[in-house]
Amino acid sequence: MTHDKEIAYISGAISSDPRYREKFANAQMVLESLGYYVISPTMIPPILTEDEHMLIDLRFVEVSDVIVLLPDWKKSNGAPVERDHAFALKKRVITYKGIDTELPRW
Image (cartoon, rainbow, N blue to C red; front, top):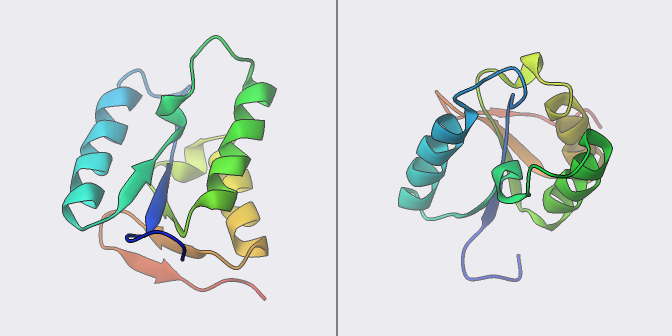
């Protein structure tokens, strides 16, 4: 870790959830209260294509210390890709709501 606090990347369903901004904002607030810096796909302008968005999301995963999966992550096209990328990079992956740590598949 090169920062004074860990960086957490939030991953979850966006296109299938019309209230995704509220969901991500709530998770960000909780994670910040736990002492994390937070980045999320909601920081990316919605004008980009899904493929362009995913390129940036994967870079976010790469610079993060931990990826936080929202409860609906399996309903997302991108979140499973982000999770697998985090595992490949040996990042810590936790699930939001219960904060259970998933072990990497190495």
